[in-house]
Length: 177
Image 1 (cartoon, rainbow, N blue to C red):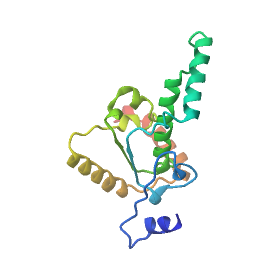
Image 2: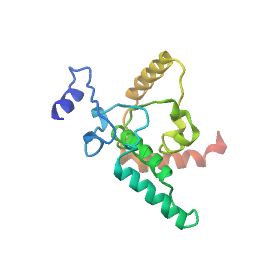
Image 3: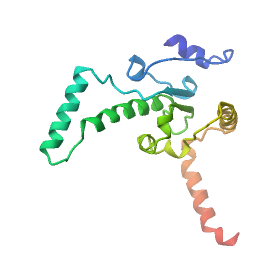
């Protein structure tokens, strides 16, 4: 991992690529904030192995509990779908680590266009999900995104009280414009 981190931030390097699978060793505990990670590509929905005995038992247990509680609670199928959503959201969170961080998130599966699947994404991601029919448009938009975001100076959080005061002042003067 140290070699990756060094290559990712080295000024003489054109970057680095780190490949991993959801639910693997890299899905937890590693920090890809800032220049350590500017993109994540998610291919498919990372469901747990359907025939894993633990998965089968968990789903059966939840279905039985839902039946005993007059339909209240989580069904096994709903839990199964949530596990895939949780893995996707965790992968997204590997790249966007704080408010000033940025990166591209590529959701490469037609099911992400589905309203129910999209609803499982973090609320701060949903408004920015775009569906493309042409890969050239993806390259164009991502290139433009990175060109623009790299020109924006980082916000100094110590300046927030001053910024809030300025906004408050401007709002109070809006009738004078």
